[in-house]
Image 1 (cartoon, rainbow, N blue to C red):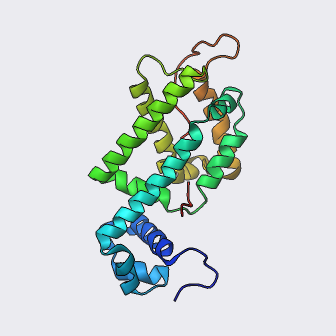
Image 2 (cartoon, rainbow, N blue to C red):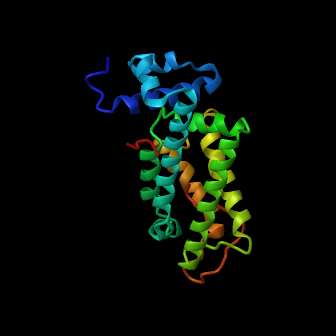
Image 3 (tube, one colour):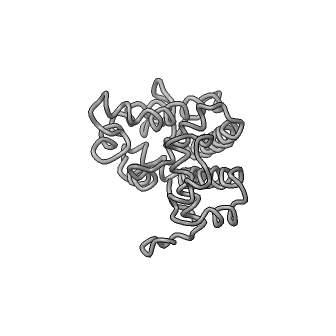
Length: 223
């Protein structure tokens, strides 16, 4: 039943179908049969690979976790901070363009999950906050960012801004007239974001804090 043009494994197709449906309708409204139909496999195969909807949900969550972990792994490179410090957004933008293809269900899924108050969402946020603090401290030690006296709170503020951009992107597209996550819209958004980021990036002349704000840069293909 699998498509001849789809080189993903049947398991990956099922997981991705579940992600798409969960993002669009919420987990409670999605059945295993609907997932099987979208993945173009039999319901029995879904059960074979995941056992139950709970097992399917766990696979989707782990897929999204791996997606974010890859972004964090990229962010541990202080060269990324150097690009920000120099106002060179292009390489960071390319990462985001590849990580967030248009139509990706990852963002609407995360938005829905985090808004439910689900303990899984809280744990994901806790893990991502810990990684963000680690990156802030590493960049601070390398002289590429100012973590400040309270890096935990600064990281939370940064994440609020980053996640807010991701979750409100569709609305900002309508309000501003451009997509802040793709194409020329991303470049325009990033250009202004660099001025905001300058508040926590050391001056190339003085190495001192400049003024006001907070945030780091904060993916869809895992095997």
